[in-house]
Each structure stands twice: as structure tokens, then as C-alpha cells.
Figure (tube, one colour):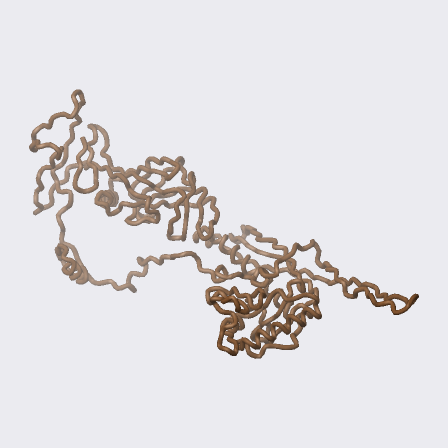
Length: 518
């Protein structure tokens, strides 16, 4: 027969000759749900937790030194994996069972060894794992991972504590008016009754004197709680005395400032081309054009000039780096460690190649005849941009497409005003503005129709700022990203990770197609 008590616990009488019930059951982990665990964001895919093989141990708070039972059943569904666990009849098990019954330990958390995973942004998506343990906890990473049922039956009749008040007998069926000791009527005829003995003992033991600190005692008074029975005032431990018990949680995703900005603004603006498989290759360019002139008189010879096609030599450069990761670091840290290292290597490699391209551009560029003395002077900026565009049209044969600047020049352009006190590139652009800006939350700006590129790699010593009127056809960039390499090193129990890329630039005509305004 089943008795429902005030606490969320079911007390079931076990049939004669059978062991007492000491089980909990519920949801071990939901599928396709993101949660922030101690190692970062994680998501379990359907079928990622095994339901066969060695049974996971039941422990407290992921502490392997506090086993309290074992998982006896695992059921896989489309939405989650369910569990049932038996709690051992030990002091730790009794305490855990009581706390689970009282709703204190009402959540669970799985402990796994990840065997196969993929990254979805900063989330580790677990595809296969070795389920090692299930922890009973007060708060779990997944809100859905809960203890849904606690079933327990006392195995032996406990003696009341000295001085404890004997409670009233428990009514086997609170829905009837049967008095204790009377036999209730059967609900269904022909149903065999199961006899059970429910010990008439308090569900909570009488409070025993214990040592408490002064802080505990005062705190109980202020909260209006029942005052503890004081045996003696315990010595108070300060934080410095219990460093071995203080957890050091790691929260949030690993912050990476390169992930928050484009590691190669110049490369993104120029675009890259496929690279031939050679150490050196050549880009063809017409350096001398044919000539055409008026024939002044009959039988006069026409103008004749041979077309000259020159070769621009392009030397391939190699970029890369490596790092050795110990077996201990890989095995004991975040499962995403190797992925984080490769992602960082890819960003830094691109940033390094972007810096190389910027240096080549600055080294080959020309200087505009009219430079800008003050980038906050809107009239001067507009006048000199037009003059530089005209100069490029005459010498390069095409109009500029980009304005390449450093961060400080971008700030000055945003603040630039004309002689009437109006910003020349306003945040809210009227129809007669010379261009618009997106404000301080974005580097987007289109001064006089040019595409603005902000890249501090353009500042090559001894310069402190950069502002370059540029046509994208003046420089070609070639890139071959080879990616990562991983090599296990058994002799040192480590893994070497490397990332590399090849790159080259072709100076088509930087002298006339890139004009510095500084």
C-alpha cells in the first residue's frame, strides 16, 4: 500500500521477503538543449549518452569520494535520457535520500568523458560520451534534469530519540475517516491486501546539541529561525584557512579580442585570389602601349611604338606557428581546448598576413600632391580628396575605390566640420551630405562615395597615422590557407599543433594607384 506524506516522498511497503525500496528516478539530461556547465556551454545530441554497458555510479556533487548508489536503469527517448538509481544503505546514502525526499537535492547532473564532439560557436556539442557518473545536486546545469520521484521504505524500526515527542500515528488513508487501528474497507473486491508495518517514529530526528559559531547563532536570531541547541562556540575559520575547500569556478566562454573584430580588415576589403603551386610566379602587365598619331601628309609614316608586356615577380611567403600541448592539459582541461587553439592560430595567422600586405602597400604607394594637414577641417578634407582622385585618374587611369585609414584618422573624419560648422559625414545623413557615418558603434563610412577601410596595420613606423586614397586594382593579393596540422608525440606525452598559410602580393601599380594623404 502507498502512503502520501506531507513531504514530497512516497513511502511504499515492500512485499514480505523483498528488499526495501531506496530509489530515485527522473530525467538525467535533455537533448538539444544548451546549458552552461562548469567547463562552458554544452549540448547533448540524441543518443550521445549510452544506455548499456557499465552502470554509472551515483555520487554527490560530482565528488567521486562520496558514492551513494548506482544507476540501475537508463531509458533513451527522443527528448532526453531517463534514469532510475538505487541509493545504498549507508550514512551518506541515508542523508542523500532524506535530502532528496525533502526536495533539497532535487536535481541531477551527468558526469561524462566526451569521445566525439563538434563546436557550434562556443558550445561543445557532444555526439558521443562515456557516461561515468550521475550526481545528485541542489542545482544542475540543465533545468530539465530533475528528480521526478523518490521512493523509500524504512528497513528497520528506529528508536525515538531521548526526549523526543512521540508523533501521532499516520493514517494509512487520509481520504477516509477510519481511526487508527481500524481496518479500512478494500477499494476493489477480490484485490488481495498487502500487509506492511509502518514504524511509528518521527520523520525528523530530534535536534542534538552541536557546536555553532557566533555568526550562525546571530543569523538565526535575525531570520527568526529556531535557535540551535548550543554545546559550545566553535572557532571561526576565515577564508584563508579553508583555501582547499573554496571552489574556483570558470564561467563564461573564453574571451578572445580577435574574435570580436576582423583579424584582417585590409584582406577583407581587397579580397584574395587563388595561388599557383609555385615558389615564384609572375603577373603580366602592359608597361608600354602602342602609339597612334595623325598622318600629316600623304605617304608620311604612321606612328609606331611596340607594346611591351612586362612580368611582375611574385614571391610566395609562408606564415604559421605551432604549440605543444601536454597530454595532461588536453585530458584535464576543457574538451574544446584543441579547437580553441586552432581557432586562435587561424585568426593570428590571418592577422599576420594582413600586416604583411599592409606593409607591402605602404612601401610601394605614392604621395598625393595635395596632402591633408588637418583631418577635422571638413573643407580641406573634401578638397584634397577630390584633388587626389583627379591625380589618380590622370596617372593610374581609374578613379579611387577605397579610403584606407588608421583608427585615429577615422575618429577625426567623424568629427570633421566644414566652415559653416556642419559635420561633413554626419551620423544621420541629409540628402546633401558629402557622405555618411554609422556612428561610434561601427567603422562603416562612405566619404565622397569611397569605401572606408580602417586598419591600424597600415601605420608603419616611423608614421603614426595612415590615410591612403586607393584603387583596388593597384594591388593583387594571393593566399593559400593550408590549415592545421596535428602530430601526436608519444615520447613526451604531448600533441603538437601547427597552422600555416602561404601568401603573396603583386604590385600592379601602387605608385599611382595608392596615394598617401599624409
